[in-house]
Image (cartoon, rainbow, N blue to C red; front, side, top):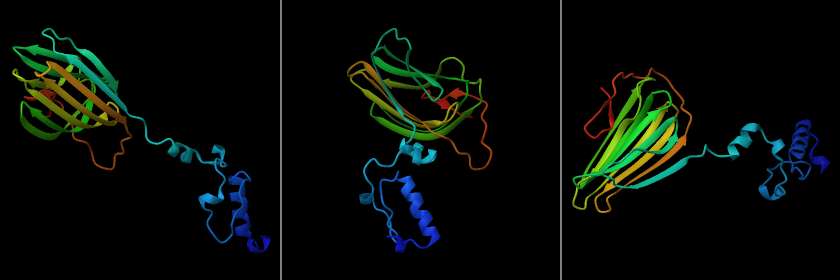
Amino acid sequence: MTKHLRHPATLIAAAALFVALGGGAVAYAGGLISGSHIKNHSIPAKKLTKAAIKSLHGQPGGTIISWNANASASPSFAQVGKALGDTIRAECGISSGDVTLTVDITTSDGSWGIDYSYMNTDNGTSDDHVNSINVPAGTVTGLFTVDSVEADSGGNHSDHQLDFVQLKPASGSMIWHETASTNTNSCHFSMQTVPEKVTFVAGASRKWTKLNPNASGLLATP
């Protein structure tokens, strides 16, 4: 084999590969080493870079939360979960035969910056829209209603889905699914969250100073 390894650069490359493989494989000059040439589980973690080890762990883990409740004539808010610096609470009420799911939020510093899309089917009528919300710290205080889902009496069902890209108080993505039903006099809420890093490319962000609910209860920007 040595007659094929006369060039100093080839010798160095072969020696480096031999060391990286823990001495458990042979370098083949003039060609690529395929997976079949490497003994299974023969490359120790200490031979990999920190970046390579981190990449093997995949993306940050997400969380799925599911909440169900029977409608009550005297509902109270229950904490559904916490994610991305947000605390989500929900209640399921019934009045005059109508069932309403209300979802409220508080944030760790009172700020909330999101881009979102919003789809709903309320009692057989569908609608959707997109928008952005960007409010400074200290704005969202106490419980603030993000959305309200109402199913009319007489066996109706309403569904809402919201897809968020959240920038603050912590960055990540969220998907909410909300239902209210007078078929079962119950409510359902599920949420999937994934923490993600935000990369700012260029330009200054827009600023909003008001925080008002629109007709459907979702936060609106001026």
